[in-house]
Amino acid sequence: MAAVKTFARALLFVAAGTTWSCAQAGEFTVRAVTIPETKAVFARVESRTVVPARARIGGTIREVKVSEGSQVEEGQVIAVVVDDKIALELNAAEARINQLKSQLENARTELDRAQMLFSRGVGTQSRVDQAKTQFDVTVNQVAAAEADKAVVMQRAREGDVLAPATGRVLTVPVTLGSVVLPGDQISRIASGQYYLRLSIPERHAAEIVEGSSVIIGERGLAPVRNDSKASVRQGRIVKVYPEIENGRVIADVDVAGLGDYFVNERTLVWIPVGKRSAIVVPPQALTTRHGVDYVRVTTAEGPRDVAVITGETFEDQGQKRIEILTGLRDGDKVVLP
Image 1 (tube, rainbow, N blue to C red):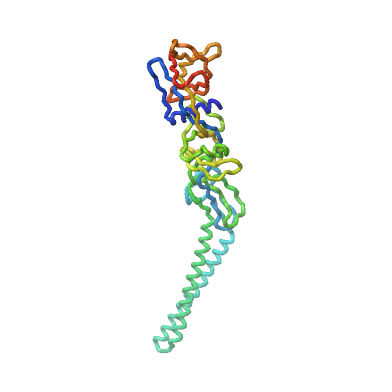
Image 2: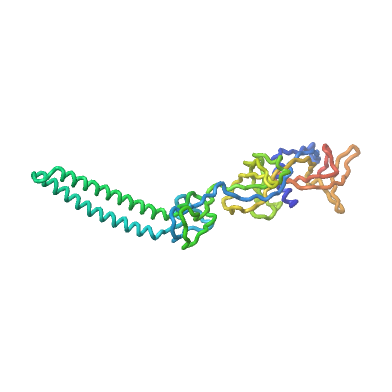
C-alpha cells in the first residue's frame, strides 16, 4: 500500500505545481514544498440511469431474446409475451365483422329496392328513409367492429417487450413459460453513463469538494504497481451529497473508460484529504552505508555527510524525488555526484 500511495501522490504532486531549484551544476537547493495527502477508498461503479423493461400485457413468456450482459438498442424486442385469449378474441372479432358485412349487403339491397320502387311511384318516401337509416347503422356497426379488431391486434403486438433505452442488460428475472401480469419487470437495463460512487469517512468531509481530482487505480481490488503508469487514470469529483449517513459522505466521480466495467464493481480510488509540507531530494543525492542513508550537504566548513531518514518516492515524468523526513532543512544545499 505504501507503493500505491507513492505513485498516487506523485501525480498529485505534479498538479500542485511543485518546483525544485538548482543553484549550480552538481548542487541541489532544498525547498520545502506542499503536497496533497491522499486516502485510498473503494468506489463502486454505477449507471446514471437504470430503466426497467416491463410487460405491457399479461400472459406467458414464449421467447426471451437477451440475457444478462447483452447490449440492446432502444425499441429492440427483448422478449415475447403471449396471451392465448387474444387469438380467441381476434377470431370472435373477425366473425363479428363477417356477420355485419352480410347485414350490410342486405341493407344495401333493401335500400336499392326501396329507391327503385319509389322512382316507379309504387313506394313511399318513408320506406326509402327507413332503408337508408338501416344501411347507415350497419355501416357504422361494421366500422366499430373493425375498430374492435384493431384494438385486439394492437394488444397482440404489445406482447413484444421492447427495450426502453439503449444500454446493457443487467438482469432478466423471467424464464420461458413464466406467467407475467401487465407492468411486471422483464429486465433491467443500464442506459446511462457509468460513474464511480465514493463513500468517504465523515472526518474527511470538509476536504472533499466538487472539482477535485482523484486517482483511479487499475481494474480490480489489487493495489497499483509502482512502476505501472498505465494502470492509473484521472477522475474528477462532480457531486458531493449534502447528507451524511452512517458516518459516511457520498460523492460521485466522473471518469472515462468505464464502459466495460460491471455495474456495482469496486475499484480503488485515491482522494485528496489534506496537505502537508515535505522536503525532497533527487535519489542520486542519497548514499547508503551499513544500512544508513546519507546526504552530502555543503556547509561553511565544507561538505559533510548527514544521516537522513527517507519517506516516500515521487515520480515526475520519469524523474524521481525522495522525501526526506529528518536530517535536512529548507535551504540546505545538497551535493550531487
